[in-house]
Length: 287
Picture 1 (cartoon, rainbow, N blue to C red):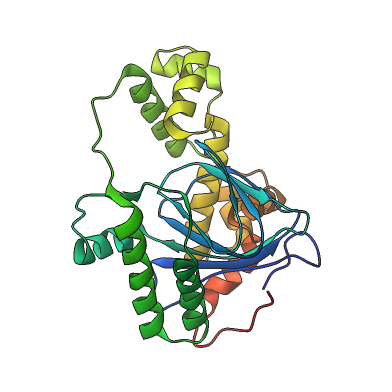
Picture 2: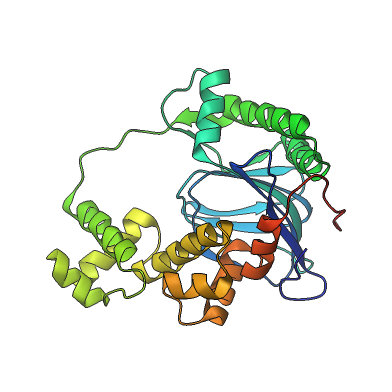
């Protein structure tokens, strides 16, 4: 368990070996704030104490106990305390494959599925999220997998839909997509906005506007998020934080530490230590 930014804050971000396509986070945050970022997979979170303010493209959700927050892949969002005492929550991060497989097995939804609501008051589903955590911490893979499927099926049935297929791309979308590819390929030495726009045959302002519209954040913010994602994958594979920092383009390990902690919720060293453990039973956590 890793202290984040004060003695009253704590967090554990981990992966249960028996469910490798699922990340779990339990934490209490007071001063910690999550900057604008997104996830490759889905997010299911429930608050057990306090209030979390989740900033989304459509507005801010004030999530308290009994609320389930559902965020689709690649949807940008922020998070911070909604009350002075902060918030305590349990969150599940299943991969897109997990959710779409459950949808195909238990619902009539086909294709890539998503959720039409972001915050819903559903105490039963909220309790199921907590039960997945408890089962994983106790090393009960059968229960963790079973309860996860019940929870996802319930939320899909009530709030799920097939995401619309992509449409023909306008010039701005094409430029944003190409810019993202350039940034991914030159992560350690990214071009300036002006150089990137010139390379793509557009203007800096037009590219900035198109990129933010497509990905929910400007290129420099997106690049920081992408660097943290790549660093996570490297830490998963056993790379040290210092090596990961250099490989993804951060100037040094403290630079990685700062951005990784803000986005993931725990420092990279604590994240790597959890990944290195074999989970049979988990420790009791406060909150």
